[in-house]
Every structure is written in structure tokens, then in C-alpha cells.
Length: 229
Image (tube, rainbow, N blue to C red; front, side, top):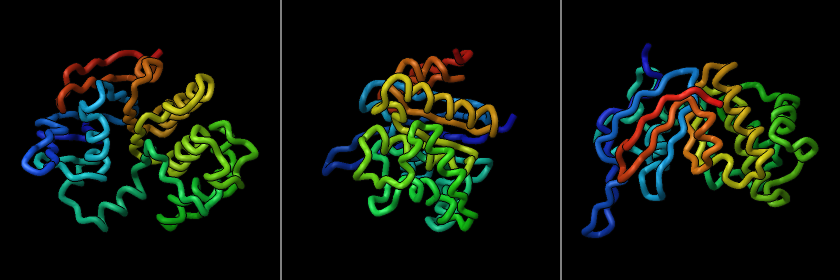
């Protein structure tokens, strides 16, 4: 089986004056369709950098990143932007919602940017599934942090992307809502064949993953394949 997402000898080094910080060190990973992978590890281990490089939001210092056989680490910004709009969903830790748009308009934004038909009914249904029924017309400033996070999750899933990257998607949620969000991510795997990659400190998320990659010092310290609970 061909990997949907492949990172080969990926190193990411940041310079701070005369000092170098090695966020990722010669990392190799192959991720497949119909799978949910949890990326765990202590703070500073390279988890978010791994997501950023894998999604084409950051470029590795060396090594290659391939999505569906295409080397995204060598793409120009315009081509990469088109690819992300069409095939990638991303849940940012900082949400990245547009403050002047309603929750519904934020959810529909990826379809609008990609030139696809916008379906308000579908957007409201997606918002209801993340526990925001009746809040479609609220703007981010009228929502709590946890509610904004749920809007960001609905936005990432609205395009039914091939790959979903989520950085601590349950971090600001109560236990019941977090369970519902995790179920949505699992549905993206089961119903749409997506490849879902989740950075998390939540053991409940790791327990529902098909695979757990534990990072330490920018490397994969443990690669565990299991059966989700």
C-alpha cells in the first residue's frame, strides 16, 4: 500500500542568533489512508513542527515531504496553497478564525476560497455536530475559546479533505464535547478514508488512535500500532 503522507529524513532547524534549535532530526514517517495517528511527546519534542512541515505550512531544512506521491516540500507557494485548499484540513491551536465572519461563514470559507459551491445547510449541520446548534450566526468574539475551537474543527472537515491535521483539537473542550469531536475525526477516517494526524496530550485521544507516534528530541522514540477503543 502506498503512503498518503511520507516524510523522509526530515530535519527542521531554527536559528536563534549563534544558536541552532533542532526541532526535527532526520525523521522518517509513512502514514496511510483510513487511519488516525496520534502524535504525542513532551513539550518541545517537535510535535507541532512535524504537523507544520507535513501540512506544507513550514518547510524542512532538509529532507522531503510527499502527499499522495507529490513532493510538497519542493512546491511553490501558489501551487502549495491550491493543494492545501483542495486536499488538506488543518485545526490550528490558535483557531485562526476571521473575527468579522460568523461561525457559519468561517466554516464555509475553505469552500469559498477553493471556488466550490457553498452550502449553508451543510455548514449548520456540521456546527450542530460539534455542539454549536443555534450559534451559526455568532462571530468569534461572541464565542468561548472552546466554542471557537469547535468552529475550527467544523471548518477543517467541511471539505472532506484527504488529510486532516489537528493540533490539540480537544485541548479546550469538556469531556463530552471532546468525545464528540474525536468521533467526528474517526468518521472522517471511516466514511471518507481520510488520513488524520492529531497532536495531543490527551490519553483518551491516543487510546482511540490506530497508531501512536511518540516524539522525543525531534525524533520518533516509539511507533505503536494498536486497535482503537
